[in-house]
Length: 245
Image (cartoon, rainbow, N blue to C red; front, side, top):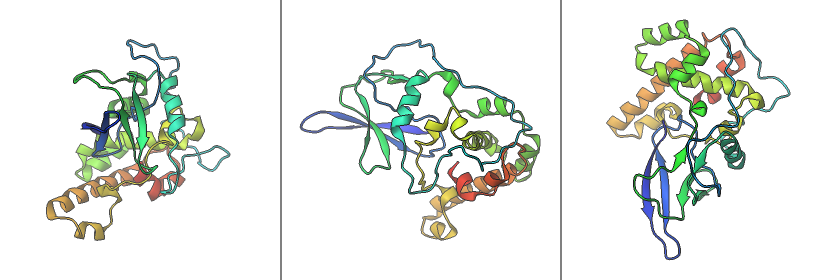
């Protein structure tokens, strides 16, 4: 889950509140889009995300459909994500906007004072990405779970189901209701799973050990992915893609 902290900044012209991310980026929807509408709840979502049985379905990613470009040079389509979020019922208080210093890292700022403890955003439950929701949709992947347990990675099972869910939505291309969100995500991560053995040598011992644990989780999930019947072989064998997921 993406965690965020509030870091208050001041300037001569307009006070700004900056929301800065830390930790893993494999979390939920970025709760950020710029709108002038007032915040209110409850809100009835106009659209719904279809739930299908994917247990025995496998698609090839070789088709005429568009897929998310996960290369490091790819641009993040934030504008489409904002429209998508608004269409699915995400609401926020006025004054919150997206900001970027380099075109790659996107964070939320506000040009208005926000009282402590105030609700900043409302996100309908049907667009959450969660481990329990992913498992309920995909069904129990018994063979994959057994393999992860044999690799002493039982604590990674919730993460594995989100991992598979993201890859499934990638596989669906533009047909996926999550396509605009996936296409807005970062392509570059400085996580343990993305590091090489040479990187660990440059880290202090504790940081290196923690980073290596993340890499082991990724390797275990990648191994278990090979047992999932509805994910295509092209995706299973694409380590750059699975590392991004």
